[in-house]
Image (cartoon, rainbow, N blue to C red; front, side, top):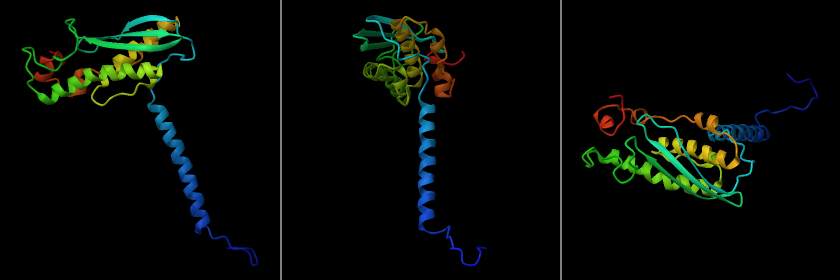
Length: 199
């Protein structure tokens, strides 16, 4: 209780609500920034190091199906001016229009085929984004193309490290590549026919 003659402070008035609201916004803003920073992948590269002009190619590690991504970047004037990316399956064939079909070349599961083709389409989007930003950490994952994204980032780290004249193998190996069995959460006949699963 306040002493007689002292001013009464109403902690539930409009001023306290404004303060609480401003404080809440500040806390939520800081939390949001932290979450976004945590979502930004760390490539382990020092992107302040200059890139040497030339054409640089590198590969990702294989996924659990044996597929390997290959990236080629062209650097002119210290900046990436073009990027191309392909993924070869374990038999050496490129993932393309047939990716997601069964061994006879038929689309036996339209949903699966559509997802596989979305992953193939992501190669161009990932390449364009790397050319635009020059930084693999700024290439956002496309829904349905997580494995492709991780392999792309791995290969990009290695190619950029070559252009910088540094060893990027440790940084690239730190990029986790989920397997098809994990991404389909299946491992059944569909997965096996497409080269995934354990058998």
